[in-house]
Length: 178
Image (cartoon, rainbow, N blue to C red; front, top):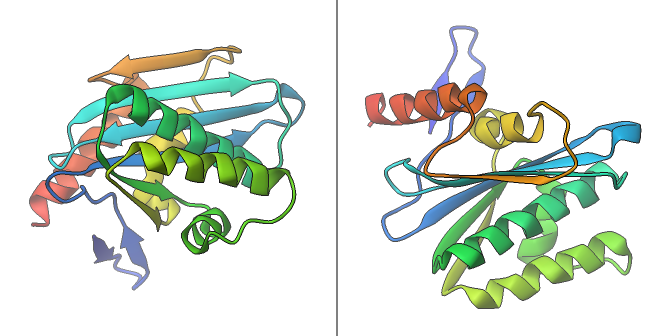
């Protein structure tokens, strides 16, 4: 869903998936010597929280690889949940384009991309979609969540307080712009 700011700039906000689909938003934070953090959030067509997760790793991947790892983490989570139809949104246009075209380079990013595409067979339908950062704020907040702990944290039906405001705002904006 798009709105215009008074300055004329386009504002992009999170949009729920159509009925019968869940939406997986992913993002990654590259933290230099501290490694990378992967954030995922899965919501239904009403915007209701299904699952959210954060994975902190000591790996020092470049941004594109970290985004692909976040997508792999999110799709594995969706498989564990038994979801059948999913829309995967990322603010990494290069990754989304690569996966949609199935044109994978012969490097580590391509290997992670192949792993992501192998998970597609676990679903009835998967769609990859690019979204600007404003439409991916919840996953972005999860990827930047503190404290720093080298672990995987999951929330079912809820998110940490710092992210709940973003999720509520997304739902409010969707409801009031329909």
